[in-house]
Length: 184
Image (cartoon, rainbow, N blue to C red):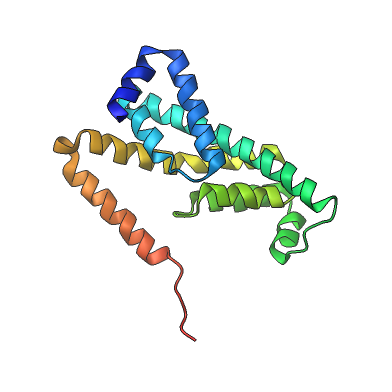
């Protein structure tokens, strides 16, 4: 199915790329379906560089829309009352530079869902420009990893060793960084 979609996207040229950006943005807003599926299709359609760039643009668009929608919904529900969670107060007390680096760290941390970062940003008073800048920079490593894995899956016969190495590395990082359950 990815090959058919990739062929369809390339047949449509620039409109196919715009559709893919919008589709990736919608997936990011919904926060349910992993965007790696769209990234793989983009890599298949346009190659690693352009496919990765199109996926990055879609992720950025989706994160911006999700941030805006979440913030609008939160304001409507809260009706002007501030949220009194300690981490939000601490975050809001920081200058925009420190907020940027906190969001950047969250974006670059493996296995934190994009929707969680979007929601966390919407709960705070961070500006849209700081949020989008941190997202733009922070999405580069994850999109690059998605592109690498997608490209290697497409060309598995030539890249099986690299693909297995990357997957083992991802698994090791997950095992080291996953939250530990404490027994009580």
